[in-house]
Length: 140
Image (cartoon, rainbow, N blue to C red; front, side, top):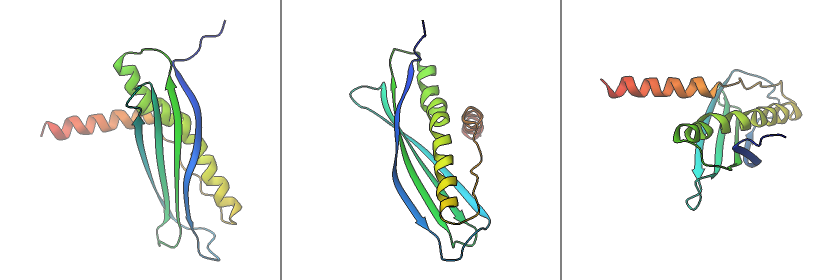
Protein backbone atom coordinates (compact mmCIF):
# COMPACT_ATOMS: atom_id res chain seq x y z
CA UNK A 1 0.00 0.00 0.00
CA UNK A 2 1.45 3.36 -1.05
CA UNK A 3 1.94 6.01 1.60
CA UNK A 4 0.73 9.47 0.63
CA UNK A 5 3.23 12.26 1.23
CA UNK A 6 2.20 14.98 3.66
CA UNK A 7 2.99 17.73 1.11
CA UNK A 8 0.77 17.66 -1.97
CA UNK A 9 1.59 19.63 -5.11
CA UNK A 10 -1.84 20.54 -6.50
CA UNK A 11 -0.99 22.63 -9.56
CA UNK A 12 0.88 25.59 -10.89
CA UNK A 13 0.07 28.43 -13.20
CA UNK A 14 2.02 31.05 -15.06
CA UNK A 15 0.30 34.25 -13.97
CA UNK A 16 2.41 36.89 -15.70
CA UNK A 17 4.98 37.08 -18.47
CA UNK A 18 6.81 40.22 -19.56
CA UNK A 19 8.89 39.60 -22.68
CA UNK A 20 10.81 42.49 -24.18
CA UNK A 21 13.18 41.53 -27.02
CA UNK A 22 14.29 43.82 -29.80
CA UNK A 23 14.19 42.51 -33.36
CA UNK A 24 17.47 40.85 -34.21
CA UNK A 25 18.46 40.13 -30.59
CA UNK A 26 19.62 36.50 -30.47
CA UNK A 27 22.02 36.15 -27.54
CA UNK A 28 23.97 37.97 -24.88
CA UNK A 29 25.21 37.94 -21.32
CA UNK A 30 22.39 37.73 -18.78
CA UNK A 31 21.72 38.36 -15.13
CA UNK A 32 19.07 36.27 -13.40
CA UNK A 33 17.09 37.32 -10.34
CA UNK A 34 14.83 34.92 -8.44
CA UNK A 35 12.21 35.82 -5.81
CA UNK A 36 10.16 33.37 -3.77
CA UNK A 37 7.21 34.50 -1.64
CA UNK A 38 4.85 32.21 0.24
CA UNK A 39 1.18 33.08 0.69
CA UNK A 40 -0.29 31.00 3.50
CA UNK A 41 -4.09 30.70 3.71
CA UNK A 42 -5.21 32.61 6.81
CA UNK A 43 -8.09 30.15 7.38
CA UNK A 44 -5.98 27.00 6.97
CA UNK A 45 -2.18 27.22 7.20
CA UNK A 46 -1.91 23.83 5.49
CA UNK A 47 -2.97 25.44 2.20
CA UNK A 48 -0.43 27.76 0.68
CA UNK A 49 0.64 29.30 -2.58
CA UNK A 50 4.28 29.59 -3.48
CA UNK A 51 4.88 32.57 -5.76
CA UNK A 52 8.04 32.79 -7.85
CA UNK A 53 9.22 35.72 -9.91
CA UNK A 54 12.18 35.08 -12.19
CA UNK A 55 13.70 38.00 -14.06
CA UNK A 56 16.25 37.52 -16.82
CA UNK A 57 17.87 40.66 -18.22
CA UNK A 58 20.68 41.11 -20.68
CA UNK A 59 23.64 43.02 -19.27
CA UNK A 60 23.12 45.69 -21.95
CA UNK A 61 19.42 46.01 -20.90
CA UNK A 62 18.14 45.24 -24.40
CA UNK A 63 16.39 42.03 -23.37
CA UNK A 64 14.08 41.61 -20.39
CA UNK A 65 12.00 38.61 -19.40
CA UNK A 66 9.97 38.29 -16.23
CA UNK A 67 7.95 35.18 -15.41
CA UNK A 68 5.62 35.04 -12.42
CA UNK A 69 4.44 31.60 -11.35
CA UNK A 70 2.10 30.45 -8.61
CA UNK A 71 2.32 26.93 -7.20
CA UNK A 72 -0.61 25.55 -5.20
CA UNK A 73 0.21 23.22 -2.30
CA UNK A 74 -1.56 21.45 0.52
CA UNK A 75 -0.20 19.74 3.60
CA UNK A 76 -2.60 16.91 4.40
CA UNK A 77 -1.57 16.18 8.00
CA UNK A 78 -0.14 17.90 11.03
CA UNK A 79 3.63 18.14 10.83
CA UNK A 80 6.22 19.61 13.21
CA UNK A 81 7.08 23.30 12.70
CA UNK A 82 10.54 22.49 11.32
CA UNK A 83 8.99 20.21 8.69
CA UNK A 84 6.31 22.80 7.87
CA UNK A 85 8.96 25.50 7.41
CA UNK A 86 11.04 23.17 5.23
CA UNK A 87 8.00 22.51 3.03
CA UNK A 88 7.62 26.25 2.47
CA UNK A 89 11.30 27.13 2.07
CA UNK A 90 12.75 24.03 0.41
CA UNK A 91 10.22 21.49 -0.88
CA UNK A 92 7.78 23.83 -2.65
CA UNK A 93 10.51 25.75 -4.53
CA UNK A 94 12.27 22.50 -5.43
CA UNK A 95 9.04 21.18 -6.97
CA UNK A 96 8.08 24.33 -8.93
CA UNK A 97 11.49 25.58 -10.07
CA UNK A 98 12.04 22.96 -12.84
CA UNK A 99 8.72 23.97 -14.44
CA UNK A 100 9.82 27.61 -14.48
CA UNK A 101 13.24 26.73 -15.91
CA UNK A 102 11.65 24.68 -18.70
CA UNK A 103 9.07 27.38 -19.48
CA UNK A 104 11.76 30.07 -19.78
CA UNK A 105 14.05 27.92 -21.94
CA UNK A 106 11.19 26.96 -24.27
CA UNK A 107 9.86 30.52 -24.54
CA UNK A 108 13.31 31.89 -25.39
CA UNK A 109 14.01 29.18 -27.98
CA UNK A 110 10.58 29.63 -29.58
CA UNK A 111 11.27 33.38 -29.90
CA UNK A 112 14.25 32.64 -32.15
CA UNK A 113 16.97 33.26 -29.56
CA UNK A 114 19.80 31.06 -28.41
CA UNK A 115 18.68 29.05 -25.37
CA UNK A 116 18.96 30.60 -21.94
CA UNK A 117 19.50 27.80 -19.47
CA UNK A 118 18.51 28.90 -15.98
CA UNK A 119 20.87 27.25 -13.49
CA UNK A 120 19.46 24.86 -10.89
CA UNK A 121 19.21 26.03 -7.29
CA UNK A 122 19.78 23.88 -4.21
CA UNK A 123 17.10 25.41 -1.98
CA UNK A 124 18.30 23.51 1.09
CA UNK A 125 21.80 24.96 0.75
CA UNK A 126 20.34 28.39 -0.06
CA UNK A 127 18.29 28.34 3.16
CA UNK A 128 21.31 27.26 5.21
CA UNK A 129 23.40 30.08 3.73
CA UNK A 130 20.67 32.65 4.43
CA UNK A 131 20.31 31.43 8.02
CA UNK A 132 24.07 31.48 8.50
CA UNK A 133 24.30 35.05 7.15
CA UNK A 134 21.41 36.10 9.39
CA UNK A 135 23.12 34.68 12.47
CA UNK A 136 26.43 36.36 11.59
CA UNK A 137 24.85 39.73 10.88
CA UNK A 138 22.71 39.70 14.05
CA UNK A 139 25.68 38.79 16.24
CA UNK A 140 27.75 41.74 15.02
